[in-house]
Length: 152
Image (cartoon, helix red, strand yellow):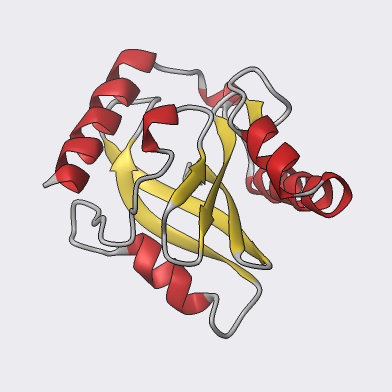
């Protein structure tokens, strides 16, 4: 039930954010670069400082519609600069509108790979409609560093 409420809160927040012009949307390359920047900070500055910086809504891990999210290998959110109330929430059972358990699927993928992309349907901050989202992720020890884009 809590996950459903969190999903609805996210959808409401995205509807309130308002549309962005397509030119303001981040690219696949920029999402990968942002994840690499977070992984590098993790190696250089450690877990605590990296999580704090990713949680900063005005920090270096937020750029237009791009933002880094960190969760652990069980699906518990440790950093989210856009939805700070999600920190501490286990999202492993969250489903998209088609019933795809995209966090659980991501965690399964990371058992045999160190990174990848996963697509799922999610409310768009651009159109306020359910659209395809593509998220790049990398495993860094027991953490998963992610950054997603709208598929356009």
